[in-house]
Length: 85
Image 1 (tube, rainbow, N blue to C red):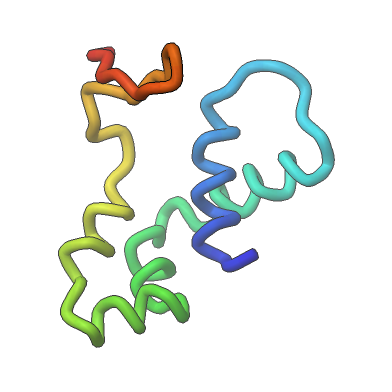
Image 2 (image 1 turned 135 degrees about the vertical axis):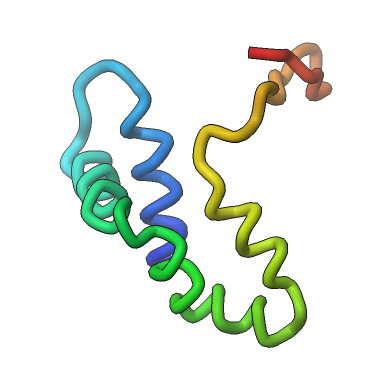
């Protein structure tokens, strides 16, 4: 698993209620550890550097944005539908 995947999983887990497995705890702690420097960490990760070098810096910036969406996809009857939160 790439660092940015672990951070992303940790970001989601951080907002979930309930008990956490050791793996989920590790992901959440990784997210919290890097939260103050999240943009720099993602930009300097292997995938971040590669995407930026290929001209996809805007995509990296979009991936870094936290709590920006006002909608979520919900799978219903085999298709995703948009739900505003």
